[in-house]
Each structure stands twice: as structure tokens, then as C-alpha cells.
Amino acid sequence: MLARRVLNNVTGGAVVTGVRSLATYKTSTGLVGLAVDPNGKETLLKLSEEVLESVTRIPADAQYRINVEGFFKHIHTTCGTTDDIQQIETTLDLGQIEEVIVNAQDELGLIDYYFENKGWELVKAAHEEADKMVLEMADSIFFTDPENHPAKIQPPPEEKK
Image (cartoon, rainbow, N blue to C red; front, side, top):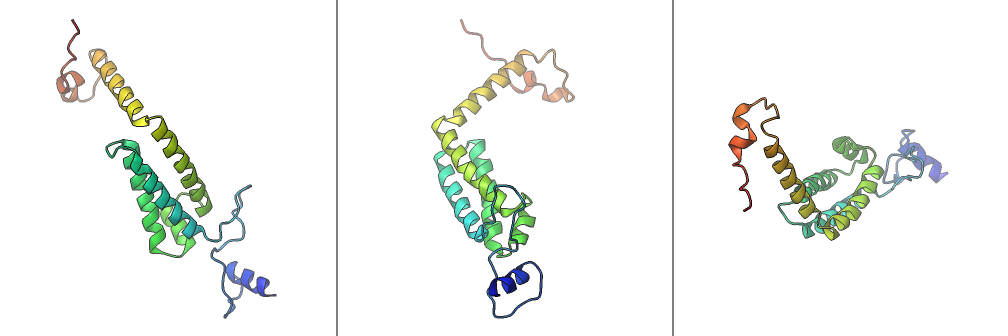
């Protein structure tokens, strides 16, 4: 009987006073294999703190770290400003809170992978190679803004003797 009254309260049925409501507004995510997290806000807050701590192992000037920190600071701030799961989901606009939790868990694994493989060095090498290719092809590429032509911005690399 108590469970039925709580369920009615959560699903929009008659409001029953004196009955503690569940931590979430839903009984199912509607997604196969993804159960409702009744403590979604707390789980996401904890994971966002873990992500923010873990990403500090990556150099501060790495774009990946900058992006992850910005993204998860936004998530952390959003979760810290309200207890309303629907409001958190609407503000984040990333799907259901359970989906964001899965993404945060995945991000922790990606941070480990990026750190172990020194991804920032790979990105830097790829960027340098791309810049070199643009300079080599500068005369055959049409630039809509000739003043920002790569050969004018960056002097050609010195030839090796």
C-alpha cells in the first residue's frame, strides 16, 4: 500500500502527505540495460569530482584537459544548484541523468588511456604535421582570406643541410 502511494506521488498521481518520495521522478529510463539511479544527482556529482581530479594528470595546456575540465565543471555546477533531476537533465541537455553517469564513467577510462599513451604528444605531432602539409601546399590551396595565407603568417621551415 505504501509503495503504491509513493509510486502515485512520483508518477504524478495524487500527492500523499507524510510519505517520503523517491529520489527520482521516474521508474524506468526506457533504455534497455540502463536502470534508474535513485541517487542520480549524488552519483553524478561524485563522478564529476573524480573526473576533475583524474584529468589533472594531463598537462594543463592540453586541449583535451581544457575541454574535459570545462565540460565537467558545468556538470558539477549544474548538479550543485538544484535537487530537481528533471531540471538537471534539462539544463545539461545530454539525455537522462543515467546516460550522463555512463558517459562520466567512460570519461574516467578515457582519461586513463589518454594519460598512459601521452595523447597530448600525439596531438601535438599531428598538428605539426598538418601545419607542415598546409605550408607545402599553400600555393595550390585557395584561401578565402589571402591576408591570412599560411606562407604570410608563418615563415617557411628552413631546409636541412
